[in-house]
Length: 191
Image 1 (spheres, rainbow, N blue to C red):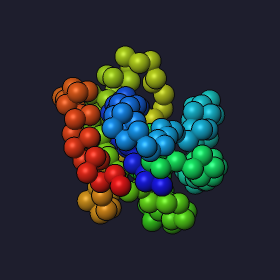
Image 2 (cartoon, rainbow, N blue to C red):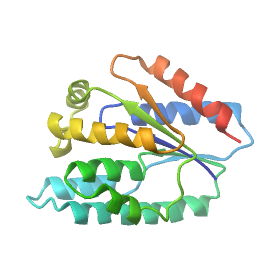
Image 3 (spheres, rainbow, N blue to C red):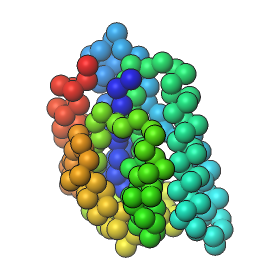
């Protein structure tokens, strides 16, 4: 199973690029079973948090990690050749670290999960991200500029230390330019 993780703060273009990448891979590698997916309970977890005053980062990290464990079992049951993940454990590392949780601990609780073969970080200026999010009416507590700047910086730190972690700036790039760059990175690495 070859794993491509698409990461970035909200408003970076992850879902759009993940869908375009799936379409590309399916059209060029018809012999491969390709799955595009995201962790199934992320919305429920973030909705629960948004409705309460309670925002304990340890509990959040554990909820997202449990969601991931459940999700990976489902993925394995599908027996795919290629998996494109619209967010993976790097999101938990970035967002929960931004809330003050120890990055090493988060990495530890996620260490049993398969590492992605390729991680694409779609980087975007948080102010542009906020504008995009407001246009899509997806604004909640995560989308505050200061917190997004912290999250973005953690992602950029991860890109320096993790293997096969590529950064593409989407701040002023169009969708066609971004997907072209993603394909240039991913295509040669897919078995």
